[in-house]
Length: 384
Image (cartoon, rainbow, N blue to C red):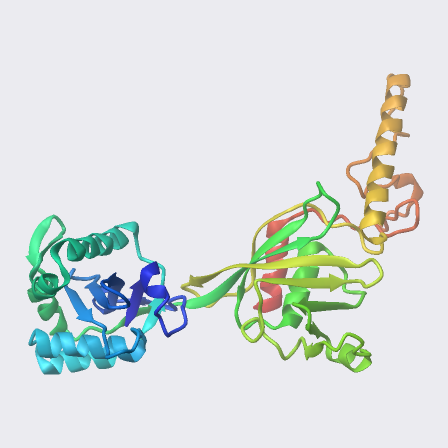
């Protein structure tokens, strides 16, 4: 059973929110809201998405506060469908068994469905709880511009013995990885990643997407006290900060994830990547890692961290100024001797061998613009 609940119900929900991992038949989907009365006395309003058939239950239980859970929703439906409205017992038994597990989500299929539920809740308050409880299941509903008897329609659909799930879905994480640089410099990538992905695989994905060559140490940090790293590095770690150390090949995103995390590469240059879990999404096909967006070119390897990166930029700008002056003075000369700076990593081609590019300080030139097609081709080979 899929229960889409409103904000007023969230406080009393004794169950975790879940992203629906399947496409549910509308007959097994209910909108749910709480209708308040005096004190902590509430009524639970349920509206079926397929038929508009609605039920209203008094949640009072002696002196106890209302509790909404998988068990209570199932019990309310059983009581309402069999005892109060007399639907066929065998049909109801099949329905409740097929939809035995309740998935609670705050996501509605459409604004229209949410509005219908809210309008019904307003009608209950205007009518009064006692009268509304007697009349609500007999209210006519409009489907495809025709008024229908919601209760009769629900009874007819129960007899069809439908399956609850029409299509299985898969969960994936939408995550943004941003390289921490000086203000004004934006280098980031956004990925859709399967929840079963290990942190070792996440490390390799980041290396590919940012153009790193994997020649330095790395680690992930989750909060203050959890660090994830290669197994060999765990054995060499002195544990000076008393963090819990986890093996990146054994831990998946599903096992340990936070809204905000960091990935540190090259402890000398200290390239810090801020990782943000933006949202949990569902996809129809079994997910494989994919880069869906990005911006900016990563610095070259061993360039000295943020400050070295800025020095490279300053040097590039100075060279561009010098080149501009020379062009003004030698406007009519051949261009063969000109130094062409295509980007921040470009070098004088006369100063290096044909197959090797180095900058003037001897650092290897690695051109790493954001190339989504190239990144995804690498990821596809890696995970196919």
